[in-house]
Length: 195
Image (cartoon, rainbow, N blue to C red; front, side, top):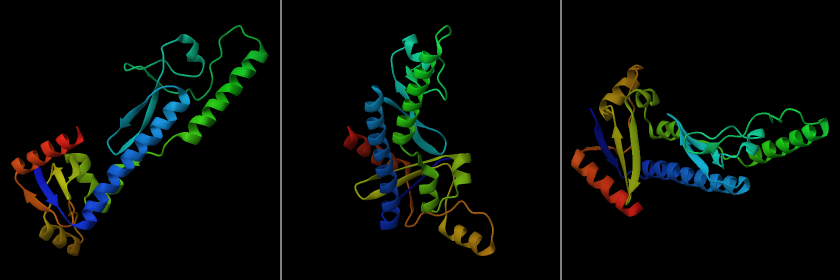
């Protein structure tokens, strides 16, 4: 069952806005990384974070010395070590390894830090274990933060559980449960504003 909430509490709004600012900064830094390597960077996410993935490069086998083969979407990741072709002399091997060290240093020095979404959910007061098991999403539109959770949050129950030392799903400051239709209208307005 899905539960829909909204909040206009300044602290809640600030946390949601910080998350979206951090994601935008990650995208900017990933674009800079892509410029350094000559291709777009794959925007990636896992269950708890957003991060920069591989680089969109050609499938040319000459790149295999430094890069893994492209994935299904054409993105390559930098190898941990160079794989020089067989039959080349030591001087060429040394040059390939030196170039690979340069690429690794360039990658490591410019790779953007991942954005851990659970840090923001935790700051909002949500039990991230519930979030992992049941899911949740959030966004901010016109001064209101909206939440879609796969579990119910209740302020009175949360406070009672905290007082007795029992587990709690958490509570978002200023949260008010809303109808799915209100949430859907907010999603449509948000997507329309993004277009």
